[in-house]
Amino acid sequence: MLYQLTWKILPGLRGLACSDFRATPTHAPDTEKGVALDVPSAAECDALLKDLESRFAAERFSNSASAFESVKAYALDRAAGNVS
Image 1: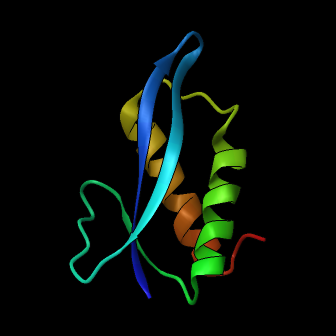
Image 2: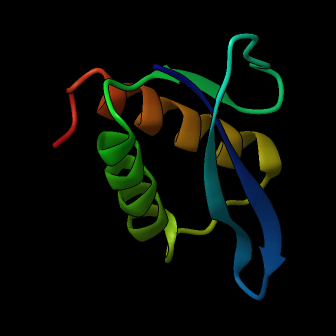
């Protein structure tokens, strides 16, 4: 199933943080506001969201573009099975 993955990038004391990861089933992905991922099941999608929350909980970024690209790259790698 195709999901639209989105998240928030918020300012913090030590830089920008990513949180509030969400995945919504979609037929028309918007790659400018998030990432489109083909995930086999809802359970795997939930596991991906939990992984993203824990992976990026403590990481801080200097700018929004860096934060977006880091999450995007990790999510795409994870969905492709390149990250366990």
